[in-house]
Length: 232
Image (cartoon, rainbow, N blue to C red; front, side):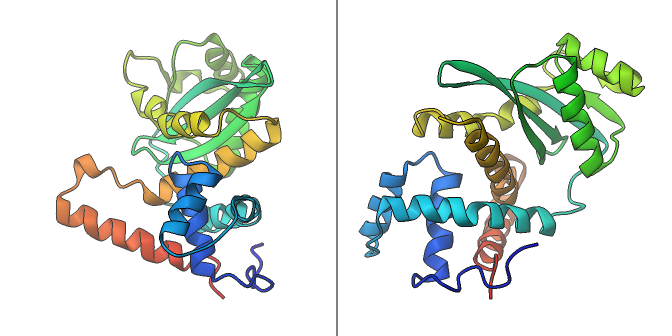
């Protein structure tokens, strides 16, 4: 449940807090770069304060966005993919599920990418979003084994290039990973990937498919809704 007064003990304006969190999560910027951008606009805030705001409010904003967008995703066709992430010299895997319109459904981090990890990821996604009609994956054997155990092997599609939808959804994360100089903890990776995916959904309007006037209206609506997040 979202706190009804999350900004109660903060002297800074909620609009500035929302702006700082949006700059850091949405764009490939560091805390110090966000500090410099705000300073340019006459707002004197320390980068450690911005770090605290992201830690304190990032999850709240992502939770409310997820709540407001309930039912927006499609269960017609899911795209599943995974990428490796290096943390302190060890490789972990970030799994991501997206629908056919690019809406990120779920992000999940595991140590391995075997059948057991795939089952955990699929069960978590189905529990939250229901069952799809089609599931597009690459040719990783873990997908086939897990879907066979779930009795959904007939839903799997492994056609070449068809999974570019999910692979492209990893690009904003990769750009942010480079800006952050990689992650240090597994919990930080899981938390940040969940937050970023929801904010990505909120501002993603597929501008290449929209007319300029329509895209501008959608972008303005997203900014208006963002300024109303966790509003008192």
